[in-house]
Length: 493
Image 1 (cartoon, rainbow, N blue to C red):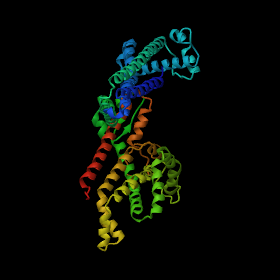
Image 2 (image 1 turned 180 degrees about the horizontal axis):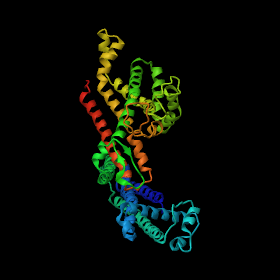
Image 3 (image 1 turned 30 degrees about the vertical axis):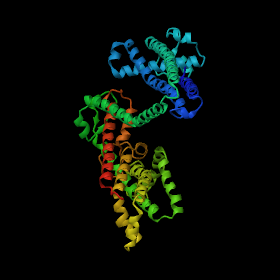
Image 4 (image 1 turned 90 degrees about the vertical axis):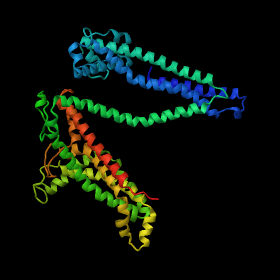
């Protein structure tokens, strides 16, 4: 039974529990709500939460745990050499899962019966062609052992699904029955309902923390595996980036310095564009613009923040790059010969700067507007002009927040990918020339994970080391921004 049907059944049980518990509470009070300890809605809500809460929680855990347990149980049937190699084991189980999914699709589409799927063998059936007919493409022919594992996988999954239905529906019924039995006019339903809601709020608040922990752990473990296969000294202090997917492994040059230099250089160009434009726009909108102009201009500036980065990348590739080449190329208007192609650090930096303008502008505008009006009035009352008030009173008061906004924009620029991939090129170079092609850490993470190397090779695992290093850098920038804002922010009464 699909999970959506299980959820529907649980919700029906919860709804029935709500109405029956509410009616029981009224009956125990002689239909006089004044005799109830809690409001009538709390009695019904208590039964609904008791029915749906534990059942849906178990359903979520079951959805995560069942595939892991089935894969772990089937690993024992793999050949010893494959089971001992983590990468090979993952690839083998991925093939098993894909074939099992293909058999499910064939049964669902009527291409075969359930009995045919269970008795299928490679000697009498071309499994690869059969699965291709139902839209499941395989990269190689299916051998007997893989097919047998796929059939075991389907059988174990079917048993787990049946057990899931019985467990979750039974849990919902038991929860509703217990809540119904406890319901009477003296039952403190409000305390239990508010406690359950508090737990849900805590769980929601924990999602971000647990997600961050999961990201960090996944990066840390794979980074450790990388440094087991590649020297950390060569990674952090190497000046050449020349990965090889030809099977040479540690003979690749995986120096980090060209990538971090390209990242910081392109980000610097972006900030040179975004900070003055965004800050001046914020000053105008908050201090000089009329309400009508502000109501129109501010949303128009913030529209830039909603443009997908792939669109910015296309803009860099098709518009900004050719314009710069036409101006600074050997055959350009000025015939300077500074650019040899449209993809360069300055191309990506300029477009990334356009993307960051609304970040700097919106944050700075909010910070400037947070400066108390009394400070403006006091400055104007002492004879200062409007421009002098902005320059000598408002901006110094808002400066810590503006610095924090710039650092947050910097961390956003460092993590950008698509604009760099399409606008800056793919060359890892230690160059001071903004008209040279460069690349960044994020661009190389993409290229390394989409290469032809094995997942457990240094050339692939280096993506996790790059990601971990970039995570530490952006985290440090964010912490620095928060520290500056909190330490130097003036407190106003």
